[in-house]
Image 1: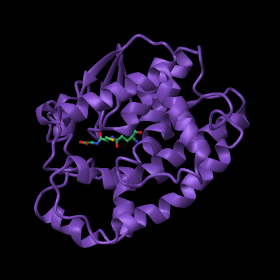
Image 2: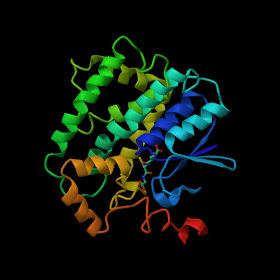
Image 3: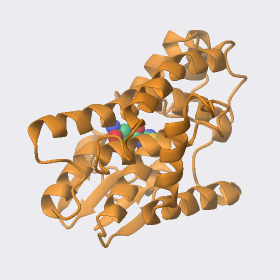
Length: 264
Ligand SMILES: N[C@@H](CCC(=O)N[C@@H](CS)C(=O)NCC(=O)O)C(=O)O
């Protein structure tokens, strides 16, 4: 199996963490730039899993696929109620925490004009109840849903980025979350995730990542626009600084590696 991956992406990190937890053999195909994705995702997003002639896009779908194919050390519980709970936490990580972390994080790696006023205070305002919710859930628990699961692997890269983005937890208010972050980091798959993230930032000058044009993505764009980013974003579009996953400007469609059916 091959995993198209970049250490910059929390979704790629989630999948890698989950696959390593399960003890699977797979090859990482570095896809820092969209043209490096070897097998095609029409949205030109990573992660993408390539398992022979099976191509799976979208991180929860990838984890669901590998859990069915390799049932050892499950990422999702078999019980229906427990499954719904894990998926809810994973979706919370992917669609509520991620938009804030990734939008703010874009200013760390991309060449962007100054951040719109008020974005950091908005991030702190929106994250605080989320951090509190995670704290409540983790109080008296080692992992979010009892056993370690896709919920932990999805949320860990998100919350773990907070300090570097100036969106830290509160040491006294979020003690359980701190303990969980340490527990996740100290696991074998957590150590390998940390090494990959460090490698990316240490060698960022040599990375092929597009630092001039950003794909803001769905929920991320929604959060940016809802928090004073409209003029900033319109300016970025007008200056052709936005990568799109949809429409005639879809960066997948304009990728030299795109199959004929998508180019038309
Ligand atoms: N829902 C997808 C989202 C994947 C996604 O947004 N990937 C981003 C990186 S975090 C991406 O590849 N963006 C395209 C680009 O940067 O060119 C998933 O969970 O896998």
